[in-house]
Each structure stands twice: as C-alpha cells, then as structure tokens.
Image 1 (cartoon, rainbow, N blue to C red):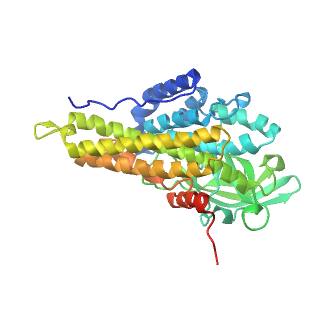
Image 2 (spheres, helix red, strand yellow):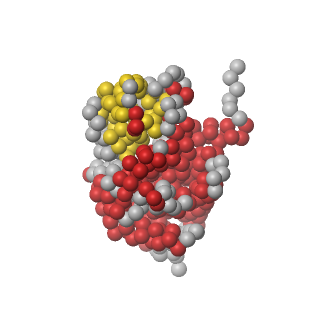
Image 3 (cartoon, rainbow, N blue to C red):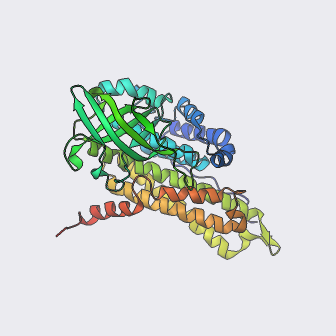
Length: 391
C-alpha cells in the first residue's frame, strides 16, 4: 500500500518543557495560522493579531532571559518552534525571526537599565520590531551604509533611508544602524528608535513575488531625534552588534526554510498517495518515489545542520561558519524541494488551488534575505582559508 500521508516529524528535544512548547506551537499553527494562510497571503493581509497571540502564548521571546519576560530557552528549541510557525505560514515564522533579530541588540548589548526598560514589552507581545541595516546603495556591503547619526549633547539626530525593511511601517520599534563617526565598520553605532518618532516614515510597501502578507518597505529618517539612552552599546560598536545579530538571524532563516520545505514535502506526499494515473497511484512510479526520497533527505539534512549550529551557539562555541552553512544549505534545499513539489503535482502544482506554488515563491526570498547565499559562501570560505588577498 502506498503511503497515504507524510510521516510525523521526529523531534529531539532537551526537556519536557521544550516538548510542551513544540506541542503548543503545533496546535496554535494548526488552529490559528495554517487554515487561512493561503487566502491571507493572496489578499496581502498582515496578521498583526497573530503576533499578539504568539506573544501571549509565550513564544515571541523564547531565546531571551526569563527575568525580562523571555522564555529562557536554548536556540535549538527556539528554532524548532520557528520551523513549525514557518511551515504554517512563512509570514509568521519569518516575522518572529525578524522580531527576535530586532530585539537582539538590547537583549545582548544593552545596559541593565535598557533591558529592564524595553525587553518586557518587546518579548511579551505588546510590541513588534524591525531591523534597519540595509540601504538602497548598501546591501551586501553593509559597512558602507550612509544613514547618519549626529550627536547634539544628550540627543542624536538620524537622517537617511533604510531599505528592504520587514515590518516597515507597521513595527513599534526599529533597531537602526547608523554612521556616527568616520568611514568603514568602526564608524557605526546602534540605536533603538520608536515607531512613532517624529520624522520617521515608511515608503510604499514593495510589490513582491511572495510573502505578500509581510510588509517590506523603505524607512525614511528625516531629522529623527533619539536620546542617548537609546544608543545601544558603545559608540562605534554598531557593526559588531549587527554581525552578532546576523549570525543568530541566519539560523532563524535556516529554520524557516526547513519549515517551508517540510510543508512542500508534506503536500507532495499527500498528493501522490491520492492522485491516480494509468490505473494506480502515482506514488507507485519509481521515478517519482526517487524525487520524494531526495526531497525528504534534503529536509532532514537541513534540519540536522541548523540544529548543529544552534547547539554550538547554546554551548558558547564559535558558530558563525555553521550559521552560514545552515543558511546556505537550508534555503537552497527549500528552493529545490518546493520546485520539485510543484513538478510532482504537475499542472495542479502551478495553480493557486494548491499551496506548493506559494511555497516555491516564498522559498526564493530565503536565498536572498539576511545575507545572500553568495555572501554565505564567502563567509564559509573565509573560515576555511582566510580573507581574500588584494594586491
């Protein structure tokens, strides 16, 4: 008898609490997120109330300290929660990852007073964050950013434009990297900017191939003033803060990618057990079975890789190279698995009546965000053979 549905995902979890969190996430995803995901993405609707629900369920600040309202969970648990959310709807999973990224600077580099003042609302679901690093002329070359922060006593004035900002125009706070000193990486500082700050405005949302429910927009800073107590870390430390956040954020993207890949695999397995051609289920055809085997292998390998990187991070070990490997492999795998799922469904896979065409469109962006996969290859190679030599 051919398999009539996908096998359950087997999780290796460190505690009973972690297993409870995964069960809670699956239940929430099944009941509150997945049923309307396709329609809401087609309508371009941003699910703000879902983020509030996730926050109220204790899932919005999982990797951060309990004393500030976080979950106190290791990254290996947080990432598996993220995978489940992304499998239900990438707009939600990626949104939680971006919010975690935006909270990272305060949680990791903020003063004790800054953490006490800001983290409880960030992690409890009252606020939603965005991360402002890229600019129209500085994407992969982030150290060349031009947005300026000029100090006037105890106040900073920020001017410039940030680009490709997830949650742009709907976020309650923005973690902003701006040039406070000279050229290069050492002249950049980090700031926490309220979403309603005078002089801060959003451009029109980008018209994207996928993830239409997640607003992506330019953010314009026109004389935005923030007090010095909203500067995070030391002056000139901003680029180091950004890199530390991106290492962790790349793991979030990797987990989201495996969520999308798992959803595409599940859809393909379910379809192949039901669709009949030449008098038998198409799951009986060896060529198609081999495609499924390759898809499943990519999903499992990607999951193992991002969990290896997460466990290195949790142990306090160097994980930058593994984070880049996970982001590269998992997102490339998601694109391949989603493309194969469309192929396995044939003409139906190319229609919006089945979700695999959405998974394919969504998987593409994961190869681009938080460092393109070409940049990930550079990062990995530098860990192997050192930086490039320029004559």
